Image (cartoon, rainbow, N blue to C red; front, side, top):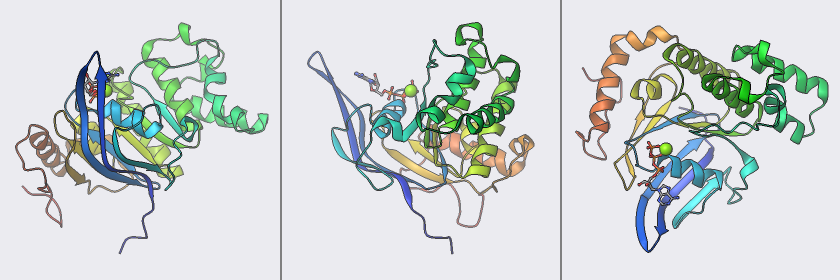
Amino acid sequence: MKAKQVPAISLNQVSKIYCEDRSETIAIDNLSFAVNEGEIVAIVGPSGAGKTTIINLIAGFIAPTGGTIKLNASDDRTPHRCAVVFQSDALFPWMTVSANIGFSLRHRGIAQDKREEAISTYLSKIGLESEANSWPRQLSGGMRKRVELARAFASGSVLLLDEPFGSLDSLTREAMQDVLLDTWARERRTILFVTHDAEEALFCSQRVVVLTPRPGTVRTILEVPFGDEREQDLKTSPEFVTLRRELLSVLRGNHHADRHVLDSDGLRA
Ligand SMILES: Nc1ncnc2c1ncn2[C@@H]1O[C@H](COP(=O)(O)OP(=O)(O)OP(=O)(O)O)[C@@H](O)[C@H]1O
Ligand SMILES: [Mg+2]
């Protein structure tokens, strides 16, 4: 039996309709899922399925049209309760790399020596020790993305990541996946991240929420059977390759909404 699971994020029958110039877009419809405390969950779905909308709803940047969203069992979704990494660049351009990473630590009143220690830990994780005093405009897009991730990790709150690695080259992307998993395994943070990459979703999560095309709703939730310590070469193992193929097939709509793609005891060949 698993230990009692406490939902850190829960969505219950959530819908979001955007109204603009008298036209309506139903972005998501009747969407329900939960992320337990300390769990790392991926959301995958076609473009326009409402993935960014889900992140914005959970973060409290926009309000749902219907349904309920709770963070740590509370309706309070003031933005500081989550750290969000967006698809686009969002570093503070008036702060150095170090100040960006330390922003939330400072905000939370953490003492300077502890702050410096945390900043240097995260700088080394993202491989940018030499850029501590650089300004965001002096960095490449991939470097900026890495700093954004470090800033989010340093925040200590629930992490919402919207295609965080989308703009990175494949080697940097793998390195950042390792950082994400390593940080999660050590700190047991609650992490919900969006990716359009089936391989990344499986490699970096304990469960994958698969969305239908717009209006996005849950097509299925896939349990990932791999342990917490994962190396990149897992991606080439037969189990992983099979699971990836299954996930891609579900994404293409080849399975019924409520059909589980895994047998209870493992993988289907
Ligand atoms: N502010 C808005 N006003 C009107 N329509 C919007 C708004 N934001 C998103 N939409 C529409 O809602 C739908 C879902 O958008 P969303 O950005 O959540 O999708 P997504 O799954 O993140 O897509 P992608 O994979 O391309 O990032 C799309 O059809 C989009 O055009
Ligand atoms: Mg998006």
